[in-house]
Amino acid sequence: MHYLSMLLVISAGLYTLWDSLRRGRSFLSAVFWGLGVTLLFIIFFPLHLLTRPKMKTNSGFRQGYEQQRYQQNNPIDITDEISLACPNCGNFYSGNPSHCPHCGTSLKAD
Image (cartoon, rainbow, N blue to C red):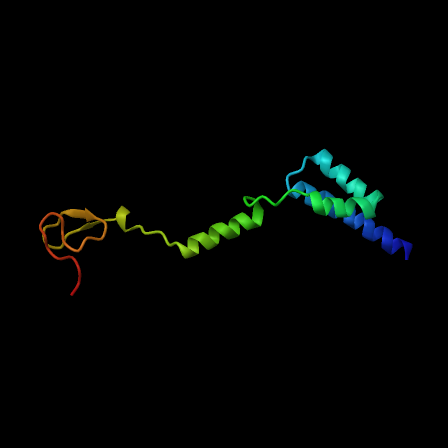
């Protein structure tokens, strides 16, 4: 039974070290928090949970997920970057106009 409690305390210390580093604390500070939780679990683990810095939104998986979600909800309009030729006069135009800017021919299909 003592081995299980020791394993739990050591795991909590390692978690505290990992969590502190992930949340932007310095390496030395993270090591001290991990040691504190390992040696005085009852005091340092609740203190760590109360005083730990907030997660940075620009980190790791969360950032990639947010970018992917943003791109899915906001498709990119590339019609302004493409030049097409007018079927009547042959001049190039960009964008998505309803009439050719050069000869005035209707470009929309009826």
